[in-house]
Image (cartoon, rainbow, N blue to C red; front, side, top):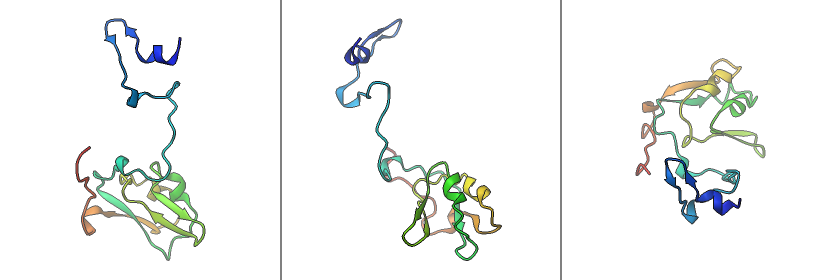
Length: 124
């Protein structure tokens, strides 16, 4: 059975599924990963707290970088710095829990910052 036959086939009790050409997913549902950050996937608009790193206490052990489920920390090897990407942080505090240095990474209420919570201009 060809890929085209799989994309448009009769299912018992559901009728026929016709997938438009621009929405066809490669066979096996393997899609290429986006390179870099994608503004379409901005997910920080429900964050209540954000992680704030104390530069003096941070040992750059990269535990926050490794623990973050949304890849919100970017390590720049050329100047050995850490950058927080707030557009994708949900405020889950996993990075704060993973930090081994007390007080190096703390949760600060979102409304303490200029602009408060990041909001999308339009929902989708």
